[in-house]
Image 1 (cartoon, rainbow, N blue to C red):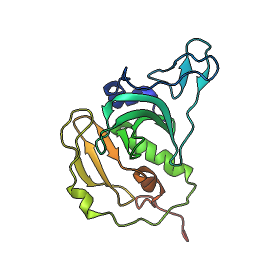
Image 2: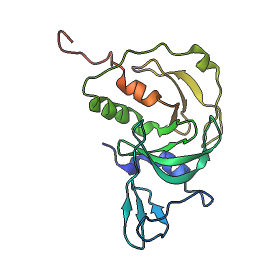
Image 3: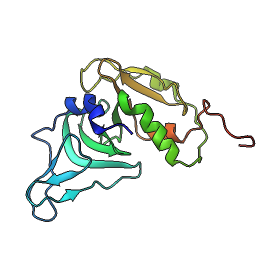
Length: 188
């Protein structure tokens, strides 16, 4: 599993916004703080550690906004955790901005957690290839293309910033799709 520091591309680009909301400590009421390498919020006053609750997609929202906006709906992206990896997440459209440096290992780990339970791949919507969204970091057009692995998903990426944008449910759809590159035991 990569360290949280290997994800610096998206984290350094998304320094916490001073105007973003913050969470107060449930024990003492002081402001909780998100540190770069943590997957929890920490109270400097009473030392309480607050782990995020996971939503239905397994995303733990850390309650701190970033300096970047969602490329789809333009609301501030939130710092979040997926399988012990820091990403940015849109609480409005449920899309995720994921550094390329962790993308493949994240899919591999999510796939391993499935325990062999795969879903039937769906046909991707070719209309999605026509959309144009802009990278939250550099503001240039992202490349929209079919994801090269399993899942029949259309993703957006910015090779300049080394970021992938996945719409709601696409990450889990990729993780739950059978991987044709893996040989299965006879009778599988």
